[in-house]
Image 1: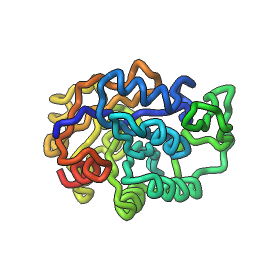
Image 2: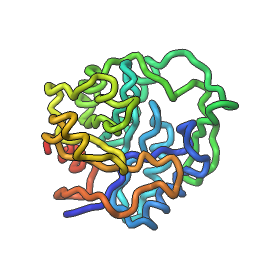
Image 3: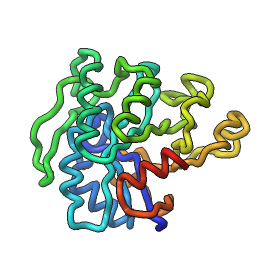
Length: 237
């Protein structure tokens, strides 16, 4: 089946996001835009995933649990998991490797935890928008051990991408999919980095506000509408 997706969306837990990026608003906007599959991928945290999944129950949309991790090399990677348990296990590992920095709400904004009714449960004082003390190799292995998949995020950007920070895409990872921004010049990217042409490309929104969530324009072909099928497709090609 051919399904429309957006696999990179931030909730109000990400300090850089609008505070109206609540679980219900994200799910309902995604439905209005006729998306079939979404992933909420907050920076280094999975605190709002359960609420988003609960909001999706009974609605014609699949929520894949996710997280955008900033590796030790300051590379952003989108990590997707088959369930909340796996995402929460990854969160424990990430939290144990986060530097002890306090969030400056006056500069970066609040990191808000919400329930499925969009009620505010509190906020995270620890600064999430930073690199964790885990190298990309270890993030890759850990996500794989949790039956998830790691995707290099927005590889066309001049910062926080695997190309900008490593200068190439190490072949031993065996990536089948790479994420690019909506406005990426694909042909220029492929000329500069031939290895990009060997992979399929995911175009997600990296939305930090409701209007920026993707329209029904990017599609994935899978046998079943499930997180496991999405992960298997991205991992195996």
